[in-house]
Image (cartoon, rainbow, N blue to C red):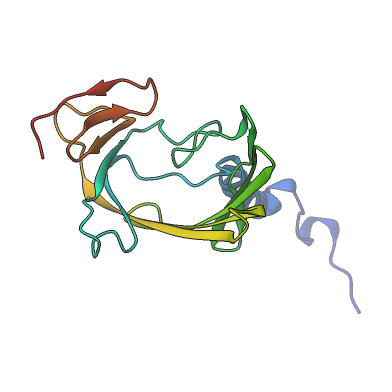
Length: 187
């Protein structure tokens, strides 16, 4: 086999690898961004939140105003991980397509543990299913409670509402960030 003279041989430079490095860097950046948001983040705006089955029971939905920075590493889906009095609230952790958060509280002799599973795209809708277990059982018989809520995106927050506001029918607007309650004329 005949060998090419040095001037005719292909030149190998670092530039030939540049497209692969750029694609690799882009993938790494996207993976880092996904890992950095290690909690579910809702689309900013107004969300209608309803307990599953509450419509059949005649209970109205509440409206939550979510801002650009409402869902942070310290506070996501209205939940602040950490120790609160007799409770330890765990953060939401990714589990496949879902987010799972667990908590353990002590009420007297009873240990109350809960597991929340959140699913959805968090841009237009989400659902949170909660299972609460009591050890020993409450009143000697109640071992478990189950609850669920569904939320859907409505649009921009109403005028006069600010991020963290939750409009509760018949009660007013409670701001979850600072605890203030304002009366409103809306039903």
